[in-house]
Image 1: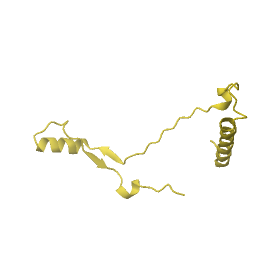
Image 2 (image 1 turned 30 degrees about the vertical axis):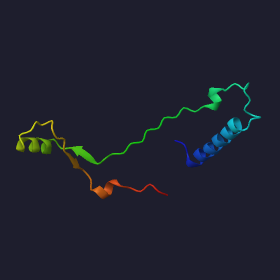
Image 3 (image 1 turned 180 degrees about the horizontal axis):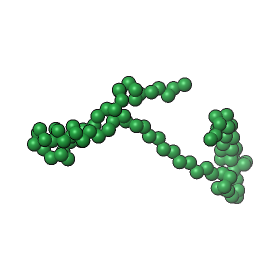
Image 4 (image 1 turned 90 degrees about the vertical axis):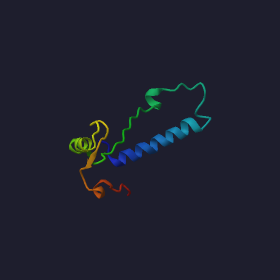
Length: 92
């Protein structure tokens, strides 16, 4: 696990390397080969959130039976947690 201080230092070093390598025409010469082992970073990002809802098969079957409809017509979900519990502020 990366400590926060290390992450911030890595961001500063990366920003400085990008600025020097690609923005300074004296440093970034055309004949300079790009070494992907030193100059590249492979990143993968996945952001997800749980909706706090689950499929309610009982409600779906009940509505279909009482309205003479196919059970595949409606998909009803139930809220597992109170609405207020799902919205958390990440500021700060």
